[in-house]
Length: 341
Image 1: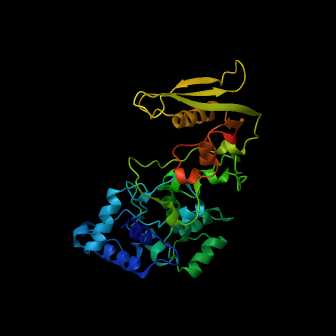
Image 2: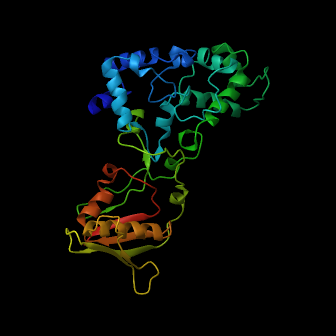
Image 3: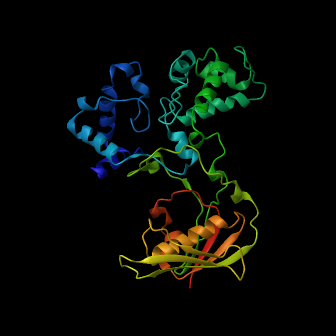
């Protein structure tokens, strides 16, 4: 079933025909309260906020939606690229502010019917016309953009449609609005590929690719629709310090195991640490290794480079080679180079 869900949420050119049929069936069986929503703008129930009557669907689709809900299939990530944000449907966007319902009205109808606006990207293009030289907020505006819209889209009030496009974008949370400053604006385009025994930690948190790449499974809890401030990455990096980290555990593997972690920079350095691993965490050498690196990354100033020397190959490979597989949680605050010694 999970493989089936993954195929259903593939919105690329190789999407199976049955997935499009499923979209149509799910959109067809909406409750009476949502019958006013135009069929042409119902794209996908995982991308939009309209509902369906699950009990009226074929059994296979009922199971697909049931399993998806049970295992937390949803759009999730620390940050998304503008390419992904622009692919999202603007109408009934699943993350838009429900209090500001701008899906109906004269201007919204014109956007749908005359301007053929369907996605966030379409909306952004129209909204940016507000910055056209000599544009003014009048029905008879003669700027080049309004003149073109009257001709190409048969729009009678381009200024109002441009305003509505901006209003629609304003309903999107910070993480979902491509007009906002995003982490990808500060992230490096490339990171040095890791070697066998050392590598550079990749601090990038932006999910790239297509809309399909933005879905996760086994999620829980509330969504966070703000992104971490990554502007520190554009600052000039200060000094790089060498840090030794280690984890230890008495009676490792036993019920009475007691683990700790250590951080050493140099004698009397305020970043030095001796850490007792809390009882609620697994007591093991590996836990100590993880905690020691986590603690120094959080304690060091953002502009400080860290050359971390660790004897845990698992941690070195995990943080430089296998990080994406670990499903990042939280934001990173330091540039780290890890070496296996």
